[in-house]
Length: 221
Image 1: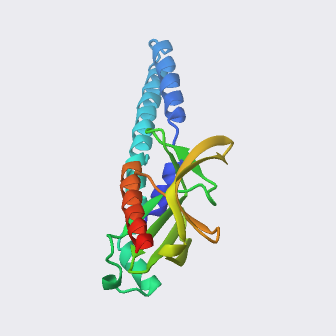
Image 2: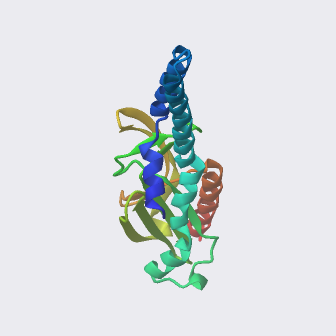
């Protein structure tokens, strides 16, 4: 991951300085009349202001560029998850693995609303579920997008102990904003639960339906 690119995304850039230079340059140019030094200075300010705006615009990081930079960290994630879980791929073939991932507000201290109206933060969370004959194996990978900081967690749940799997929505307070946060939640008979961020609601719903179908079969058996 390019942490500098992530920093630029949240830092933001203002073209205000360039605009000021252009305005002052234009004023000096038009009031310079026949006094060439003032006219030339005005033209230099105009050119400098335009150059500043162009340079700043090129240095900006778009929502798509930030997303692409972040998801690079997910390359090979499922292989890593299986290794951490100590599970062989042949053991978890009841249904295809399910992976939820998305930006999370948990622990985040920096955030920004993108042009698409969605919040992006400096923490990203990915959760992988693998399905063996009797158990659901879960791997969580959460990482900071601004520095080399991450957390990993593994859990195993017996099918008979899983009560529900669904999406939940709650309003969280973040940077003095009320934000609707939607996530996947798996709950067990012991009252424990695990939540997973996701960005694609359609994929999440299809995955949840597949998981529910498997759970129904396992509980009936």
